[in-house]
Image (tube, rainbow, N blue to C red; front, top):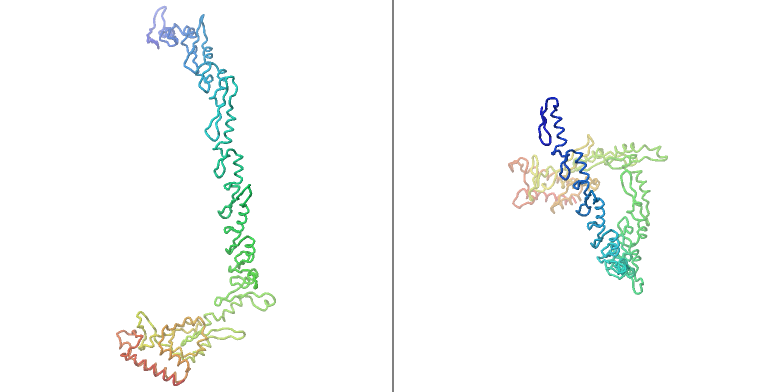
Length: 547
């Protein structure tokens, strides 16, 4: 069996015999004293037989790092030596560090190096580069240094010089006034600032507008104009001051005048009261005819149509309220009275009846202790109504000088083309309101003025009138209105109607069955125009003879 040294690669074999040894034992004995074993080598490179001899030599070896001491401020090293001239490297290093040039404790602010710290401190007290002896102005770059003489006494105090300079420094804000003017000291500046117009203490701005009032001084510091008083006087009458504007937008000179007006202003919310049902506003008014808005509001709420306690007619908007007091026992409630009123309301469509001939409207109504039946009045009037409605109806007016008329059997003349036929439906069975159209102006004018004046406003708005009338038609209507309903008038009208029926039919005159264009103006060569003119002339003669 063989074994190899781990340091020098020497091989060892096991020997036999009486004094034989194992290979491993030989190897281990060789490894302890092998020259290649690092434990047997000192820092100086010397090789020893074993590690104990090496350690004994290393304690006194100069190459041992434990015996070398390096200065903390410079590269110089100090070694511990043994023997007769033995030296301690640590003590040498410490003694050198005290006076080392690299030691900052030995260098002054001016760069001078001293052998020890005490010498440096003694020099630093008088050194001009020492920050403790240099004083810089807080406002400008000027610097002042404390100097010493040969005997070590102060020659000039830098701090005192700096303070004297700061008092009169141009950049010192205490020496500059608000107007930008410079003064040698704060006292002069304060004396000027007291009367300076740019001083905020002498400038007073209105809190409502941008106007500024300045306190001005004259000779000997006397006040010429007081800005505060001017500001206060202006503030009371300032246009932008909210206290001077009333709710209605009117501007006053001072708040007292505004308050005096606001107490009676109609726009003041205190003087405005609204109904909680219909939101109608009632305003308290002052003067000769004073009225209290709250009282009027309370009265209105009792009869308000939006009040759920009241009942309102859906046709005439009449409101019924519950009666209070003793009369409440004799009168029914508001709902019952409203229903009773609705059956006889003159604005109810079921109580309105129109004549089929003239379109006159009759209403069922109740007046005091009498009840008027509109249907019966309509029937009595219709039985004796002599209004003959026109049978022709205007179909179109696209051409300015022609009218398009329609008739089932007869052809209308030029004078009848400007009239419209009254179309109304009788409401006798259902009692509903008949829609009355426009009727023939010539026939409708036969009604008496008293009957025409009794028509309701709504029916008068529905009746359409011609915008342009000929002079002959005006004269014809005036004559008929003056003559009344005589037998001669009825006979003349009957003759005119019979003459119109004798005209040729629309089928013979044109290919169309029911439509024909009729001229508004008559020509002398037209036979129809001459015939109509002759009939009109006969009618005028009959009417004039009756007068």
